[in-house]
Length: 169
Image (cartoon, rainbow, N blue to C red; front, side, top):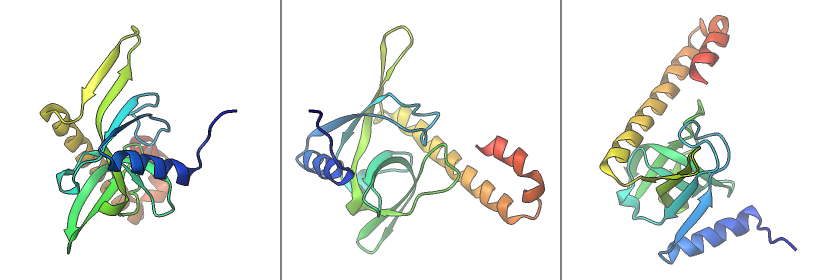
């Protein structure tokens, strides 16, 4: 009989493993992080100090509804004694609800992508090169959100909606 976990069960298991200082390897699914993640990649996730999280990092966290989600940090601010993070999927127009450091399960530190030739590409997300790329992707994602927001508020949006959707989606 196959073993299945509920969303709550999976989060509890991930949380327990990561809090023990171990790593979790999961297969990426979904399209919210496209084109950076197209699905099928193996992600290595580990717990890191919240203060070390930076704009551009891919984090694995639980939403207010208790669902696991993996998106990119596009804003980070400290309020009193707590970090508040704003995340967004690269392929999405809107931002996620802000999340606190208490809901973060871990950070993607390594990505394994299968290539057409049967080889695997290993991406060290901690390298200066990938930190820079991820920061730029976060800035672009935030800019995309801001431009879309301005256009929606403008009266021209309804007449140009199909063109805007093609450009931003």
